[in-house]
Length: 88
Image 1 (cartoon, one colour):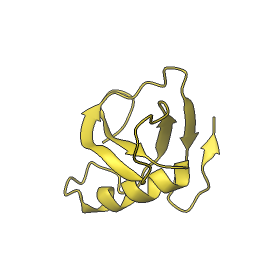
Image 2 (image 1 turned 135 degrees about the vertical axis):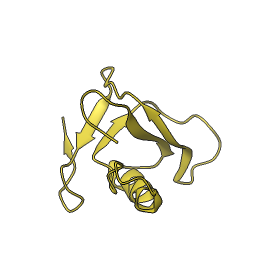
Image 3 (image 1 turned 180 degrees about the horizontal axis):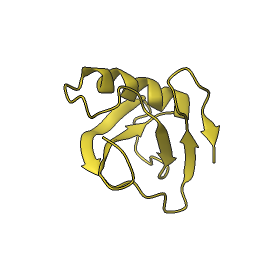
Image 4 (image 1 turned 90 degrees about the vertical axis):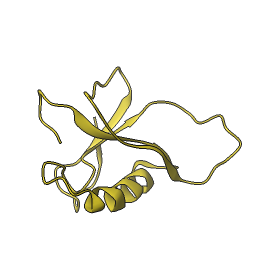
């Protein structure tokens, strides 16, 4: 889901790069049956560093709906799946 006045479909991901995070999420979004959900990640926010002992890239929590706010975090955006990520 998306838009300025509705919750976004969110995933909490551990990955080494925005592209690695998006690859994991894109696979999951393609499986969601809701036609209101875009089938690729269009925004990534870096919310922190994982201090755990594991280092494998994986989805930690998903999907959940929440209004997305930047809160000063690093942010990458793309309009289409083939576009490169642009940091803003």
